[in-house]
View 1: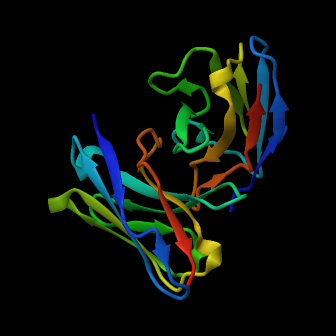
View 2 (view 1 turned 90 degrees about the vertical axis):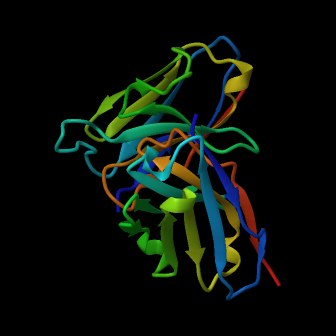
Length: 115
Length: 111
């Protein structure tokens, strides 16, 4: 059974870069054609951040204004998310998930943007 | 960007009673392949969202048949035939038709 395990720092300084990794276990990146990242900000709903294919094609949410990038490392069965120039508004729980449908989720990483 | 609305935004239901949540889209969610790309997710406190229903009416693996989805065009409904205490959380509809994929604002279900 495929599982997603997330890792990365829980605290990022303002104007810094948020970096998270999602490792696919019990399978490989090829388990799904596409993978997504979603976040849940305090007091707000769910927001789709973007998606990446097995081959590295990407689609990002325009609301993040070019600050987001995703990558895939097939050899390590890992997905990566980077979000640059973070502000307090980027404080959220971040999830990696299989796409589509989103029936496999990472455990979530709480990221706080603060000095 | 496709905008989704949900109603009600909060719902208090006695266990054993039914519940219904509506989701409206700013445009039809019909894909050229004939499917409507509308899913339902439930997020319980401290947990990642879990898939309940995909493509309007397909229950995800392990989801009890108390949950059902219906709809077409731009109007969709999630129904719970008999609410249980473990169903509490926030229910989100989500459109997967076009990027950026978007979620509804969520409906908080309490018992």
